[in-house]
Image (cartoon, rainbow, N blue to C red; front, side, top):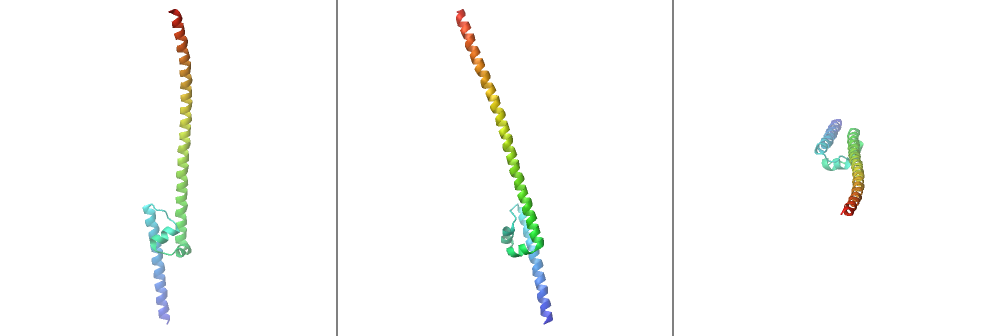
Length: 124
């Protein structure tokens, strides 16, 4: 009877190690493919229960760390987008000022031409 328990324990340890390796391999595969990594996606890709992923400390820590880096990368991309949006606003404001200056100059030149035409008409 004691021998059968040892065989069960050995089988249990082997299955646990295989499941752990499968989970880590799936995480690496998803990461290399650039796919989103979370408990649900790892569970679906590896056919491992979510409860195992949450209960196994090393796997849970790995998934949570990758999720944090993904979130920070998304935040950096948003900040970059906001930064380019702000720089576009600055460029647009500069162009608006330039257009206003040119319109003012154009208006002054138009009045100067009218004045000179009047002088020319008086001489004729």
